[in-house]
Image (tube, rainbow, N blue to C red):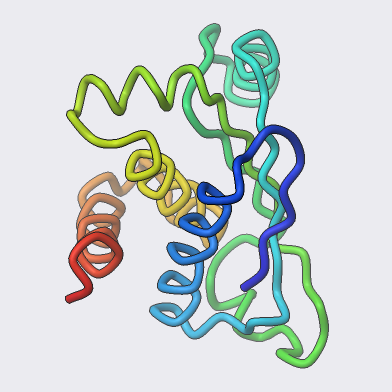
Length: 147
C-alpha cells in the first residue's frame, strides 16, 4: 500500500509510516497498488474537521475518511489498478503530546495513530472498541517488536 504525504513530514517519519502501512497491508492482504493520503494539519483544522464530520468540538490526533464501507469492499477491488482508500488527517501537536503521556517516541506514536487511522479506513469503528483495540494491539506488536 502506498502513502501520499501532504504537509510536514520528515524523511525518517515517512520511512516509519511506510513500514507500518506495509505491515498493515500484508496483514489484511491489501494490494500494493492501493493508496491513501496523509495530511498534516494544525489544531484549528483538526478541530474544524472533527466538529464538521463527527460533531466533536475539539482537535484530535487523527481523523480518517474512508472511501469504502469495509474491508471486503476493498478486497473486491481490482488489485491491478490504483485505488484510493481515503484520507487521514494528523495533528502533529497532539501526537507529540500523546507520545509524552504514553512515554513513546514521536515516531512510535505516529506509527500507532497511522494504524489506528488505517483500521478506520478499512471499516473498524469505535462502535466495536474491543475488536478495534485487539487488532490494533496485534499490529503494533508486529510493527514494534517484529513478532
